[in-house]
Image (cartoon, rainbow, N blue to C red; front, side, top):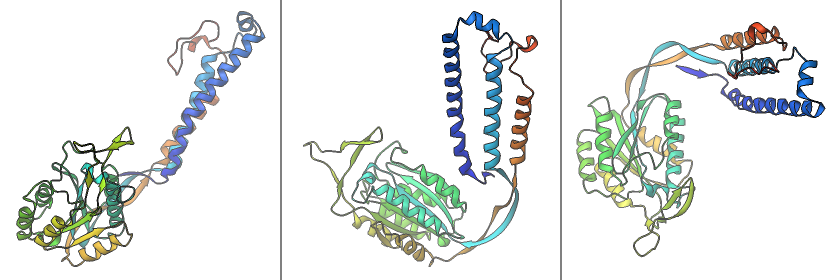
Length: 350
């Protein structure tokens, strides 16, 4: 496993192109100043040993050394030791609705963002449980298999948006079927499925599939997000709200929370229904309810020790600075054609 111990230092790499642009601007300014001073042919005769290419090469060595020093400060680390640990928890699969109706803004900034915030808070408060992620709209897809790596889970969560699935709809039944296939063990008494949706279901068999899953032992919880009054569905173009979805008469289509179907699925799945309003206590409430599920012991491997690799990057940086120190700006006929930028040497200033 690879990580940066001090990843904030990586932002300093953004200065590298700024330094390069400043250097190019400085060189152009010096060149124009020399042209104003006198004829370039005469100036070249007065400075026969000066090499523009060598100056560029020296600056490039400086710039590369700077980048490697930044990487050394960020301290790349490689997982050096795996340790087997025994956990006692449950497996939680989250099925998240990513249909366009989840962009409705009856919860600010929108339903989908509120759902992601809820899942993120749940992950922050998990200890020994494993979590997986299913996304669904017109069909269901496994976005992340069950894992105890909570940092990775939050990274997967950040990639979720309404454009991630090819077809629209609200296939709640398909998400339940996929969850059944995604749990590693057939014994479902240690597993739970959380369905987060506005309940705008366009299929009739979701309740039947939930009943089948419950017969296999899977507990299904539903989390309704949105408002019964509803809100228009925005149309996003180039990252901006361009309009709202409209019916044939030109009126905005309202997307309303369908609590009835979500309550029916939770009841059929022998779980519980929650209404999500955006409160910070909701994640704790859901986790407390999940705590009633019987836990099981399972073994997992985690990285317990990391080996720092900063010394290699620092060594490369020092080597580049050493090369720069012994590189002069005077011409050398033996290396006249050598240029780190791959540009052909000019006859008058190399």
